[in-house]
Image (cartoon, rainbow, N blue to C red; front, side, top):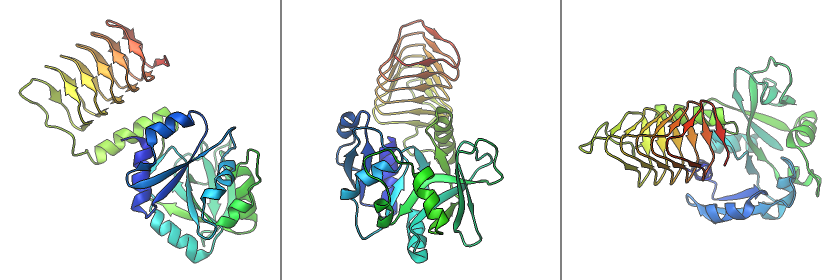
Length: 316
């Protein structure tokens, strides 16, 4: 499932019926791919001519936001089941200007470390500390903001939520923390993207998964997921821990293990793909071998008989 659709379903489950996508690079392509309605949610676009940081896009989209009601802001690379309904209720009950979702992690150094008092008021916000911090609660990248916060964001230049907007709210005691205890992944890094897919697949195998074998001689080892219009050749083997998106074809006697395959990709006869991420509309030739930990960008062509070394990255 595309990330935009997954996030739209999550937001919709919390009562959100309209989302605004802040976009810049490749915005025209994204508009075509996403359209104006996803998973029952209306989609609007706010386009940055130049990058405006993490707060600037909110100010830019102010004409699309309510002047009277709080709204959610979320990073575009978050996969989680944060209960935004209850988060919003707490935000309104405490009359905070901003509420930030927090999640507990073992090592907060790659994220924003957050300290709160016993009442949940945020006392300190440290974005991506260089040294290991004693705090285990980190910025989950999901916020509820009141309209007055938008007015405090300077116009026409890049502005950072974490370095410019949040510290002022913390000093004034106007920011609350919402502790999330469910699953949370920041899939901006490939390693986390792979981990999220595999762990969620293990937790709840989608209904589209198929039996372990069929009369055609191909085999599916669970947990695995096959998108619509997936085609498997005779003797092909898929899984375990493999995700094939829509319209993927796997040739006769090909093997796909522990891998994520994007839509409309073709894997040739007797090819082997292991522990890899393969982009959309890739062609992997007959008899090719894709080594462990490899990443192949969309629309690449791997000639027949190729051997891609482990941990390789192919961008074109």
